Image 1 (spheres, rainbow, N blue to C red):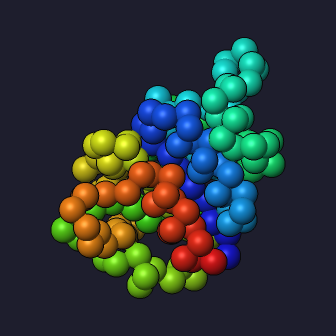
Image 2 (image 1 turned 90 degrees about the vertical axis):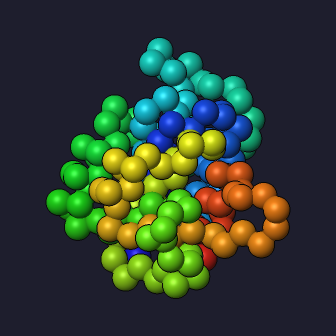
Length: 153
């Protein structure tokens, strides 16, 4: 089963690099970067050193693509038969442990503080969350990506 990742409005180059490294380890086929999420190279082809530092070369092995509109990208992928799953705390979210995708699946991760917008969540076929047992309400996005990606493998 093919798995891809969409990172929308992730601020931190370190989080992006870490997710590239985890995606490589988990066998992710592609990473889509949307909004202001930094890319491994800038528009002039120069390497983003902070991403390279945390990705440790994974940004060279995991195919990636920048798209301006996450909603248009999701619509395109849905037409191609992709299952779209948002990773977010939401009243409609189910425990990530129940997520057993049977077809190619795109996991959507959002901003470190604001998460995935309501508009983007409406485009998702399902929403999963990682239950929190401590005092903090959430995990770092790169840690959450690791949990999700390895749980479906």
